[in-house]
Image (cartoon, rainbow, N blue to C red; front, side):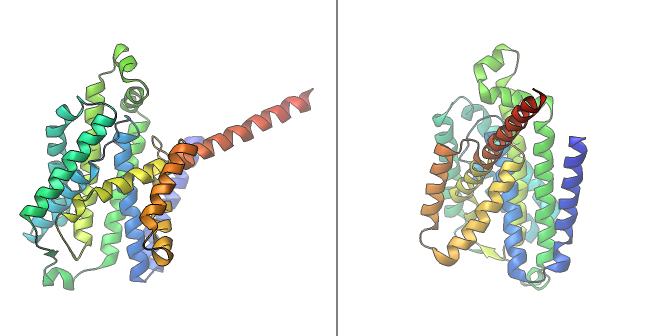
Length: 316
């Protein structure tokens, strides 16, 4: 019954999102929604590795950037943009395979620092090799429509959330979470920790690559190294933590909260919004372990306990 209700709610939300362009005609609002959907994809894909297996990666922007770079180059060369995005996702997987084995030899903070270093190497390399701004050709600019981009971002966000849901409710997902809780104990029970972490990395990389491809299709002009910036990783990580890592809804809530708050701050405190986000992140880690979803879980438990006590009292 609970699963049917959840499915119905998900279908209603999806239908509502699909109808948005019929009612919202302003480009700035559609752009705003595109950014929310993009960050839902990024935070949810990061969560598959960071939330499910506990491997806190700060190199997520490398996969996002590779997907954007491959899609942009192939699309401008005459490829269908969807095919370009798929190729970008595969390239992100290949890169993840190359770094997976050495990266997973590191644990804890060493893994986090190692992935950050790899991301920074790619960021610097692309900046040196491709220093010129990438501008959309005139023929593509003339046929540019935000509605098409909106539906592409929506499709990728839905795919990413669906994949995260399927993994979380599978035997594979249980193995990932066992690795997150206690890797050595999980291996003693027969769970192949390296295999589970690698699968999480590959899935996370592919989905981030798809999101990067959608970004490349969306942006009229940008420097090719921009999607490789660590800012994309840091933002995605903060969204997942604020919403609640290891959950389905957490990254979604975190992305919506983050983008809305960023817009409000950019209008009033543009110079200080990075500081505000940093302070917010620290406060969440210190006082709200589990993020908003963790807070909701504790509130729900308290309500349930009160009801149980009330029921026991009425029966006496």
